[in-house]
Image (cartoon, rainbow, N blue to C red; front, side, top):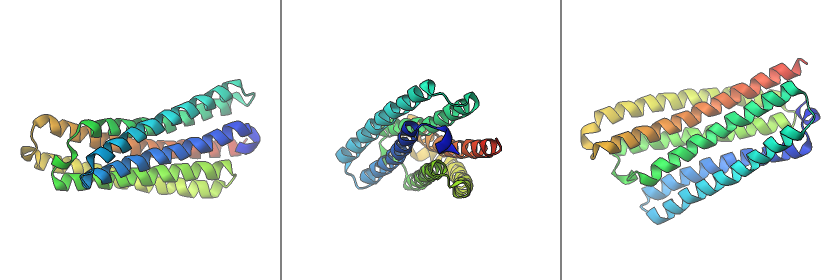
Length: 219
């Protein structure tokens, strides 16, 4: 269905775009690992790489939008597809925000229980981004049942991420007296929230993709 509607150029660009989404999440995860190994210089370089990949993804997104605007496809589908791209872009934006928090946050000074919670949340974000990329590619290939199955997995991952987010906020309250200066607690909260928003956006993208499948298969 999608290959019958969308120009091949857009399909190729979208596949490239979701690959970049994966790359951004993985790069962010690697920066956390490097910080834990006290390889600060390499971690900062990896965060810079994350920003660079984000710029590449934005360039691809703009190309997709340009081709969409010029394409002669059903206006309803075009609008739905515009919105889907916008939701995917939100995932990237939240990971970018988390990367910015990490550049100013003295990560190794975060109490260990909180660091572990943040890293658990990072794992869920990486897992969710991999799944939305996989579901998107299956959709483009016409494997709609497999895409729907993967979207259901994203919902479970987001529920797990939400639980981790709540636990992290609880730990932040418990350990607040051990965090100095107090502004650092705000940065930790913001980092945790950015990651939760990224996981939420993955679920939103999955929901929207499923709605598109249901709507357009009926036409």
